[in-house]
Every structure is written in C-alpha cells, then in structure tokens.
Image (cartoon, rainbow, N blue to C red; front, side, top):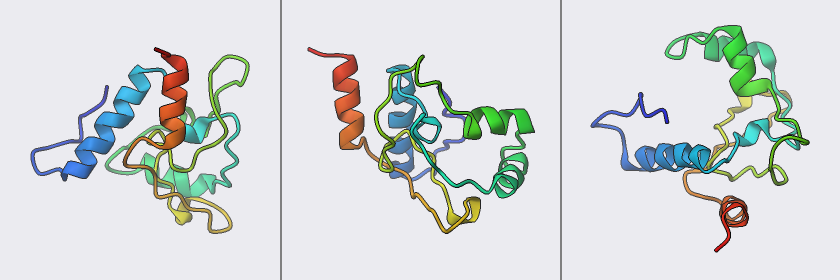
Length: 122
C-alpha cells in the first residue's frame, strides 16, 4: 500500500480516499481506469507530460503501466466501467479529448460495494 504522499496536514477526506483506495487493492480491486470496459478518450501527450513531471517523475513505462494499460478481461474480475469508483484516478478534462472528465470517487461506490461483496460473500 502506498501512503507515501500523506502527511499530518493532509485533509481527512484525502486520508480516507487514499486508505479506501489502497485497501481496495488489497481486496483485489483493479484501477477502474484500467478496467477492460473503460473507454476513456485520453490525450496521451498531456497525460505523459503530467505524470512524467514533478511530483511523480514517472518514466514513460510506468505511465503506460499505471494509466494506459488495460487489464485482460480473460484474467481479471471486473464490472462495467464505474465513473464513481474509489478505484478511479481523477481524470481532468485536460488529459482527455472531447472534454471527458472524472472527478474520482472519495467513498466506496455502490458498484465497489457489490463487487467486493461478490468477491467475499458471507
């Protein structure tokens, strides 16, 4: 789990969002923007410029791995793309073509809850 950017002055809503997101990974949830059904019209050059610069300084391969690569529908569990999922990175319209934008979830969405419940039934 990566909590490296949290600090004592981080707002409570951000702490909560990050903890829920990281525990989502621990429970088997994938990044929603890498869902096989996601159809996000990315402006790849803008996304590379953003993530390859500070504070991330990611090499191109890491941007590809964390942002653009999609999970194979034959080797992962997933639902239809959920724009309210806690597992979705915020996507500003500057990173897309056509004004597509997602603010990103700050709590578990209803789809997140159903998915986790199906993965771990009582």
